Each structure stands twice: as C-alpha cells, then as structure tokens.
Image 1 (cartoon, rainbow, N blue to C red):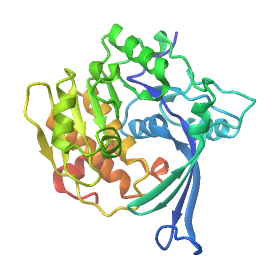
Image 2 (image 1 turned 45 degrees about the vertical axis):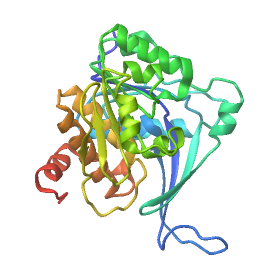
Image 3 (image 1 turned 30 degrees about the vertical axis):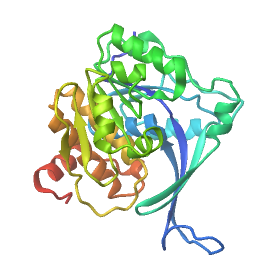
Length: 304
C-alpha cells in the first residue's frame, strides 16, 4: 500500500546545468568567467518539489521520463527528502532531458532541445495514474504534456483534489478547472500580445471559478476571481542573485497556500515571498526557501 503524500505534482522534471557568470551576461565575441556551475534537479515540477519539501510538505511527482545521466543525480538528491519518485519512469536507453541555463543576476538564458523533442511526435513523459493522485490533498498540473496533463487534471477533479496550474490561456480546460492559474508575463506577452495586463486578467478570471494570478517579474502582481475586482500587490524587494526557478517557486508557494487554506491575499503574498527568497541565492535546489525565512520576510520585509 503506497503511503499517501500531501501534494501530487505532474510536469517537467529535468536535469539542469546552471552557470552563474561573474562579470555580467554574455557578450558576443567576449570572454565570460563562470563563477559557479551545478547539475541539479530542475524543470517546473522538479523545482516545485524541492521547494515544497523545504517548506515541510510531502510530495509525489511524475512527468518526464528520467534517463541515464539525470537518474543517478535525481535519486541522490532526493534520497534524504520527503519526495516520492516512484511514479517516475527511469529509462536506460537515453541520457534524459536536460537544459542549460546561463545566469547573471536579473538576466538568464535557457537552452535545450525541447522543440526537437516535441517535434518527434513521440511521448517522452508518463501517463498519470489515478492511484498516485487519489489520497493527496492538493496537486499541481503543468500544461505541457497535452492529453496526459488533462488526464491528471481529470483525476484531480474526480477525487475532489484542487490543483494549481501555470500559463494556461482563458480557453484552456486546465484553466477552467484549476483552483489557481499562475500566468507569467512571458506567457501573457506571447499569447495576449499588445493587451494590457488588466485586460488579460479580466478575460481570464471570467472563465474559471478559481483564482487567476498574473505575475510580472519584479513588478506588481494582479489577481482576481470571477465577478470580482482585480487586486494588486507589490513584489518583495530583495537583492537578486539569480532568477532561475522564480516562477516555479511562486507556483510551489501557491500549492502550499492552497494546502493550508490561505485566503487569496495571503496566498499571493506567501507565494511572492517564497519567490523573493529563492532569487536571493544560488543555486536554488541547494538553498530552497524555508518556512521560517518566508514568514520572516512577510513579517519584517527582510530575509535575515
């Protein structure tokens, strides 16, 4: 009998090669010095699992197939953490999905082969299993895996498990059924090019009974529910070391807030504080935000 976890996550679980540069971002034809580099768990779901564990939450995750280069690192990293990897499929004929991220403070550039992977037409992720989801209290379902993402959301709905999703447009079934949809400004700029943030939120909020949140990097966050006014909240001001994982950490903060029954205002504030703590250090997987740090930032405006 599988032990129940509080949270189920479905989405991208990667091996991330991260490079923090010493003297600003890459410039054409100029040398750049690497200050720090790591190979650690990444992806929207992998990062969220790391953050939720650090906040004291038990997690089960599924999604991307895990290959021969990613697998040993992933197992070693989560060996002492309350993260159940049993749903993941480990394969022995592929190195696994990885990305490469160059970082300098507020600026980062991710590289990978995702377009090539998706263009193959072959599935390189798991089909979610109902037994992995049933018994969990809250879930997060990322939208990138098509019918499998929809199936995970269907299982959540069937068992009355509220879920958080990200970057879903107003006409997406995932958005319609989500308890929370966190939309980044990158997604909004691409899907709703030329539209004001307020217009985007007004469109999104009327297509779901859940909470819609629009994040804008270090700018003001907008959030609202169907029939209600658009609320605004400023981000926390911190010294930025790396923005890698900021959005994934915000999502994890929403999952934690949903699990603990926070109000909309408290959820946005808590998720924003989680993200602020995350961007103040590098690398995030080795220094995830702790609950006491997040609470201190909310209370005092300071991390230390």
